[in-house]
Structure formats: structure tokens, C-alpha cells
Length: 128
Image (cartoon, rainbow, N blue to C red):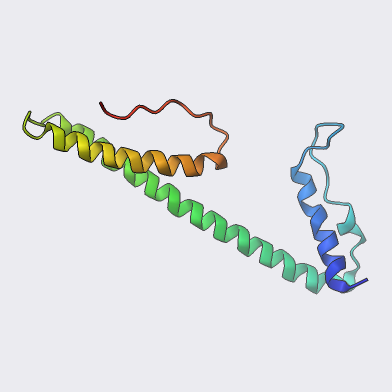
């Protein structure tokens, strides 16, 4: 059997500890193919694991950046909301327009991030 295929086969079992066992409902173990991986294949195993960890790290970095952007939108919206208290009739349409634009960006960003959370969506109502 090809060394690369052997390592890939062993690595495939690693994620099984994250998935519930169909019968028991408990988390499974990663002992399957990984425990059968010979010592001689450890370098290939380490290389593949490092690549997978790098990929995960890049995904988390991207998610961090998106969350930071969303938090910035929330801060901006809170500031705009506070400033709206001093709006005049002449500036009210401008205040609502700015708030609505920022709120739309926040809502769209949350929509893209929501699948990463287990939070149940709440109805979002924009300014009227």
C-alpha cells in the first residue's frame, strides 16, 4: 500500500472522536486506523497533521477578522443610536439612512457567520 494512502487512511479516522457514535450517542475514538499506523510513517503523519492544523488556523484567522468587523459595526451602530437622540427634524432622514446602511452590513455579516454558531436566529427589524 502507498505510504501516503496509508497515512491519509489513518488520518481520516482522527475526526471520528468529534462525531457522536450512532448507537451510543457518545463521542467515538480516533483509535481506528491511527493505531495501526507504523512508526516508520510518523514523518508523513506529522506533515499531514501540520498541514491540517495550518488550514484550521487560517479558517480561524478569517473568522476572527470577520467577527472583529461585526463587532466594529455594533460599536458604530451604538454610537449612531446615541447620536440619534440629538438629531433634528432636518437631519432625521440622514441619521436613519446612515443607521440603516450600517445595520444592513451588520445583518449581512451575521448571516454569513451564523452557520458557525448554534445560536437560533432572532427576527431582525431595521429602523423604520
